[in-house]
Image 1 (cartoon, one colour):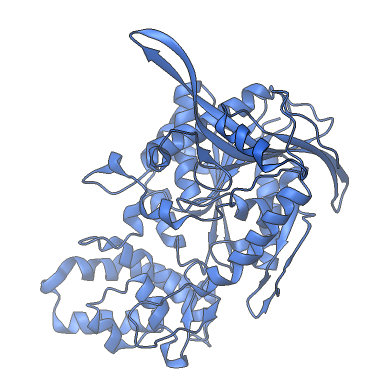
Image 2 (cartoon, helix red, strand yellow):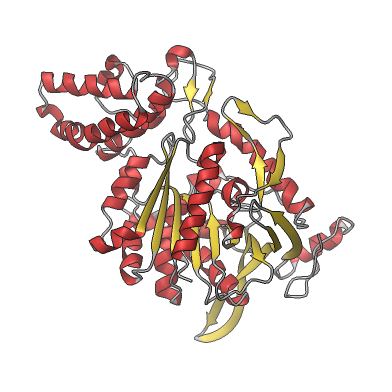
Length: 503
């Protein structure tokens, strides 16, 4: 492994650098501090020799004072890690820009979970790795088929607002898309990749960002994409947010509740496909009709709906009646296995955990997040410094709940958040744009049937619906935690990139 100065002439910090020098540099005008290292990865088919570049790129804004140009002022420093295959032709080699969601999450999950050349060892349900965990080569990395750029939005990872700038200015729907889009444009331009096939890979809120970016990059810069990879997708918050008066979310969660109940033994004599087919039919027809009826529902009709909903979800009929036929997701995760003194995970409902009080209406913590957070955080903090040679004493913000809770959706005042319109516009303007959507049956954060509902309502011609491919996995939100799903998902994503690259 070797390190070199970046293209600004800045030499990366070394362990011997004293605190005074570090302080002086922090107080000065920021510059890119990218570190370059060389690596090799042996896959099943070949050995990949690749270059890694990691560090922070400075975003600048043009300042106009009294109608006169007054320079470019630093506004943020955005952390990224880029992997490029040595010796590849950049006009034919695809490049994928990847990020997670939250909002407020770094890209560590996609980076060290499924796409990157190194992989965090977390274990899985009933076989979790003990501390201090580990890091191994990811022989199924997408790097074999595409260069990779992992982006941490402002206030995640090592990304921060510039000195004197307000972090909250980046904690919102439009400003997030604009800043991430600017990083993509800069990277593509500086690395001579405008003719490369280009892809976005987003997970969770990252799918909101990806859909918004597809339209933004295309309309602002003329940068049309070849494909979007949407993992654990949410395109329309109205399909899964339990806001007052919105019955749609209650219905679209039912197939996920049924899948979770099946996993935990509530349907021992039924296959999962058969159960889900029934749950989808019930959710989209009789159940939605019943919720829409309100007080017009007769006593016998109400009893029938309660019985069927209880049977599908594994809950008691009494509980379903008590919540007025409307089962909110955190209440479900708390109630389903209450009789066993367990709660089930939200991100991955295969996981169960104990709680402090089994009379709670909503669990106090998500056992699936508790199981996977430390392995990924530990792996990243070791990897970036010890293997990629990047040194920074800031804490690496894996997931900022402060950013999440303060995120601004001011653009959607008096309306629910949706990017279905932006994705539809991008697809209509660029009919070559392909979509690959990954669903986890046990994902309690972004239910698969809600995502299907949003896809079914895209405002595109029928001919463009053929541009969408789907993959379903017996796993949760980060479906790559499940070993068999990770192997199959790696193959699915590789096949998608190869097909959509058009080269």
